[in-house]
View 1 (cartoon, rainbow, N blue to C red):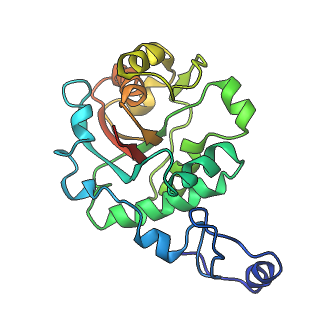
View 2 (cartoon, rainbow, N blue to C red):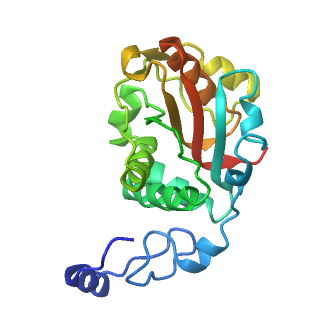
Length: 233
């Protein structure tokens, strides 16, 4: 946790910050989410067995998966969904950094990052990034990098198409919607490396799989996956 400055304390007094989940006032030492809501986040705990869990099994046989976890189970109408809504749609990229740091600190205790060489935030198409002003997956990656020291590889893979929202699509439609939208740009940067793909929420795994398959064209690539939320199907 970052040290509290006099000016931060004064600003908090003048303009109180609120918890993104419950809306209650945050204490000076809290960031984004209050201690009570943090305690009651529906955590997956997948880091305790990061290869044999329901999220990792989405990727078995499709990509060279090493480990996978998400911080919490995502349900669209639950209060905890506000974390993702505010981060993605309400112009609060700072939520990504805070949650990225939180995830990283928790996962370090289970050695989740051991042997990983770098981070690949799932890229947005240029059109979508212009609309939003930032990539929420990159904001998460910044927080993770701050805690772990792992480099972020921003230019290795590019998203060439804006395929629209996947919210209302079924599993097979999602798979078709992301086929061939990613393009490997800097193969030599990631050849032979263990890469951590970071996304905001995983639903069917289709986007991660499409991104990972493109990265694997570099040769000798191993993949781990970390997301803030895992949608309950």
